Image 1: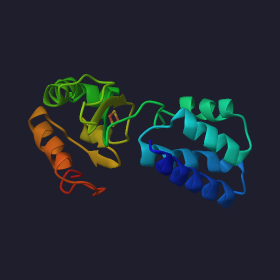
Image 2: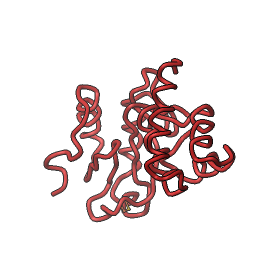
Image 3: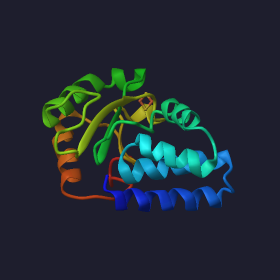
Image 4: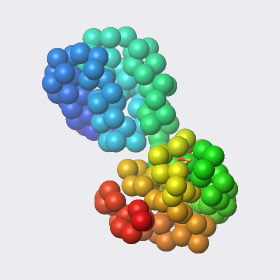
Length: 170
Ligand code: FES
């Protein structure tokens, strides 16, 4: 991260800390902001957050390690989280997982070298009757089949944004 980017992020951190009156209730929103902007929480960011909230960096580190959506390792622009809980497992999660790995050339827990995609497993997403289910950032995809995987990945390679993927909730 460039010095100017760090300064910019530090300014945002301080602004949010002020908004929460430096109260710990602002920690998660600030960490989410940093995760979204930098795609990870760096040691420098933890330091800046600790200073902004007037707490020890170890406390910030503790929060980061507790929540799976926060990471100290840089993740891809798109984080794919495939549900591994029983309903999705029985609905064919393994075949979808294999296809995702083949399509991206990485294993679960890894990020593509172009920094675009990270593959992870997650627990139940609350869409058990429509499994296999997976999240791509905030977008939920249901009834995913190995045949659909290439198109889903391509749709993210070619665009950003949209929070709902039309036609996949039925
Ligand atoms: S078991 Fe996969 S969404 Fe609930």
